[in-house]
Length: 376
Image 1 (cartoon, rainbow, N blue to C red):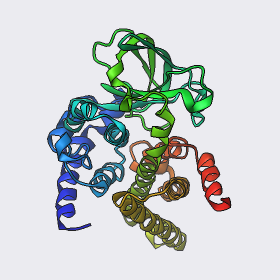
Image 2: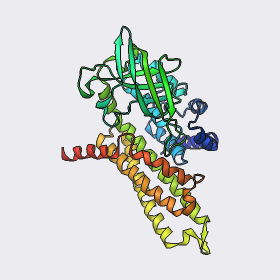
Image 3: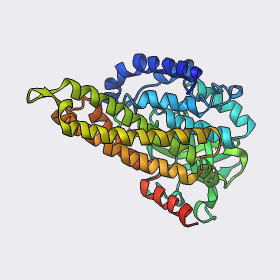
Image 4: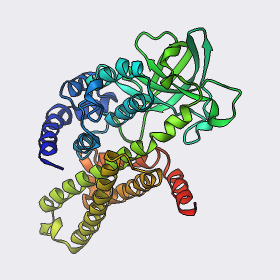
């Protein structure tokens, strides 16, 4: 952090407290945050903060992105899928043609377009070789048929990073490409139901369907077929740093809420904070949270410096999200019966935390990647 970042954090904090926290209960009931908050965040310069100013971004770096994630997630704001939105923008920034960058990035930064990544399918999650959505070239358009599931920001999405098979004759991931898709008034495109999830109730995770959808060939990311898998793999450390960062922010938020609660709650004639078990449990979770913060701060700097490697990102994603579940579980326990009530932040955080170990690559896949770096 520096003085400019502190001022930025203060502005983000006030925005989250004023424009998000009061609406979170309503958002959770309707299962999405609506488009208005995206437009407002864009107007304030809180979207695509690490995208260069020449493409409409704020011209900052990953520290600015981290501030926005932290201020949302330490308050349990999980419906505003800024992380996925930023990842989508980075696919365009890192792999797109100049025309694609000029066309899409300014609108993503302003919130005019809400971004999503249409990758996962009913039979293809961590294993991208199972992608069955097809994109067949027909003149100057690709004709897309298939479906996607578990798509974050799916219901509100106006821009998709679409993973499809452009060459069915090539085995595995070799025939995959990425298409840039604007969804408004797109014939043959349909968003299905918002999925009923254990947690993250305000997040519009949805199914997407494509039936003879025509996408201009000029929207092929980078302009070359068959590079989809390489493009996806190169951006995964950035994505996994985001997931890990959300885990740390949630731990910090849950710990702060729990400290406040045990100081106020009384049992057997004294506050819960006075019991030795409470003190020791808080000592444990505070230590884990501090270690996680130290680790993620190093990862943030590595992203800024352009040197966060796959193994380190995988370590951060797997270990921090495992610890996130453990820490918040202890916080729920210290709340007693109230820890099971949705009106309490730690309760919602506990349910929200579970998916962290699944998306962005399951933690089992993370261990596989780490083991490869260890064994060589």
